[in-house]
Length: 315
Image 1 (tube, rainbow, N blue to C red):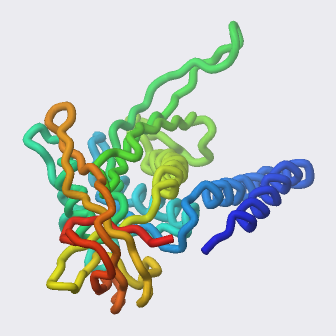
Image 2: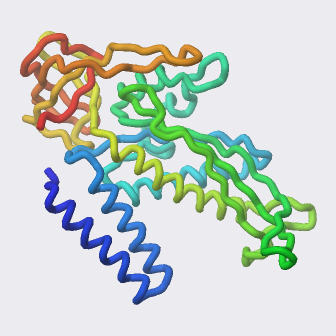
Image 3: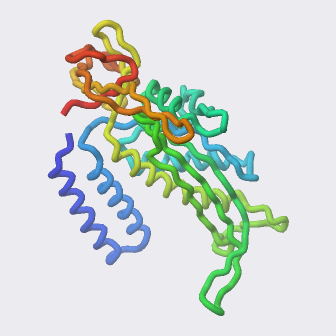
């Protein structure tokens, strides 16, 4: 387990280094140290545990006029890369993994078209996920924008790209993050020819903007997820035997003991959205066998240990 002393020592050292580096080096090195600083601060704030969280990335929808250009695929790749780099304790289930579930291709939706957060959480638990990330490319447009001060203002062609994301917690079905991101690129600042005579925005320009958004979004997704404690879920029971949907990949080992909590409580909110209400501790289980993506155990103490219950590492 991580210790508070080590985390505090590393945080102090990196913060001091981040203040000194800009005085000695250029912007590139400073940006690198800035990212490292964020990682250390994020690690410092994270719950003190060794288990990795598993996050599913759903396919992003492309609602812009620029379809069939591979924009959403490139964006998801950049987003996944940012999450992997920024949060090394997060395991990412991405659209290009072997065995990627169809469930994340076509997310459950209500008749209104909104995502069914309750159904999403239930299936996410079965897949051993701590959170599910989804979103859409909302808008890509070219417009003119005045820049400068007073009478020195000049008008520039600007490409504006908007992307939104939602991050759902599988424990409750609530959103950990719901945000829209906008990035603008001034065409005169782009080295290559960004726009042709027909005023069609270059795919290169759009991808540049999307990459910038993916980096910002990935960092904030990390911040939202890493602060949540790890939790796993019981998928089936038979007599004293228990099966959970997490295994060796996240760091579970034979002999580990987990506390079991009731998760059958349901709360109905605005517009009849349903959420899980975490309940009280009902017992403990001890892991006996571990596989890559699931584990088996036995009831160690307590009663009412059933499918749907959540588990947390025992301190």
